[in-house]
Length: 385
Image 1 (tube, rainbow, N blue to C red):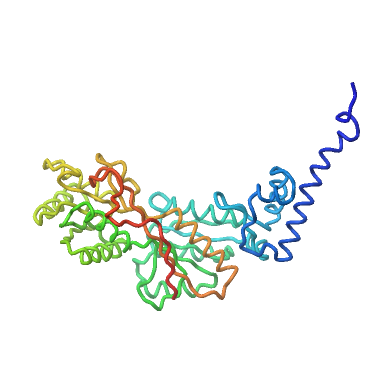
Image 2: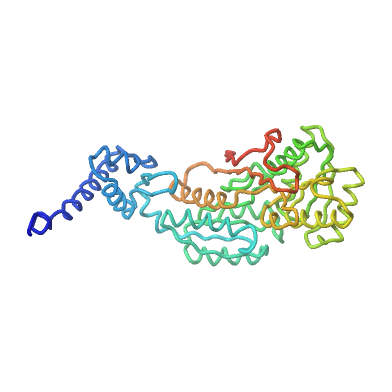
């Protein structure tokens, strides 16, 4: 039996379908060039385009795939398809240098965010670790500049022979755009682009959470000589003053933290009758929890704890409620800011703060976040220079 499916008409059907997606791609390409869909705008959904052009979703998908391959549009998962600026083709070839203190703690999620954003833009990267050594960091900077990077993402080491102010001023004068990650100057004269966790807000929200659970005397447990220590401390005391409760501090250097230091810390908290503590960071929270167990105190019944970092907080014997810096979002935001700087070099400097979120676990006695604690979700605040 013979029929159209076996004759010339049947053979031509795939060509007709191919023509449809190419015709649609040409039309969308033309509309983008004419400004119907300007740079930064979001295209209609595949379903809406299919209805508007009387075609199938699969045809739309193939047409849009062509535009993606040509760097005319970019798909953003969960958000839609966006029109890229005319210079996007040049940006896709950008080489970005990335320098972080290390890739084993805190920064892996930052780096994943950076890579996702750069990959989506077609850019490539060179990555190095400074190990918190200013000299090593300077060497990596020199190597990357010699390799011809177009821009830098840097978590600078501000403890070293060069004072922080002078070091940051020198970074602002580098021959390529630079975005600081998790570091910012205290001076309003700083002109570096930066993306940081709003650690002051993190310390503040931790206290508000505990106060919302009824605690009136709260301790702050610190590891010294971290760039994050002072911002967390400022936020803690701002909340204590605003709410009108009692706050107390215990601190030890990073290298001094041990069960012995935790025992001393617990003794000080008991002396002032503290019923809760904010611990910077996860290790200090776990050590304090173990110290409480050694003297027969229960967490959270006798002592409620909130850790800061949320790297290992969930592995404690009683999983620790923790303030979680938005590390992945920070990496994505910093990379996007740098790519935008390459496109728009004359834009004013931007200094972006991302608020931490709280992950509530067993150590504070709340099964789920307390609405009265007034803890905020992730918020980005831009501070113009």
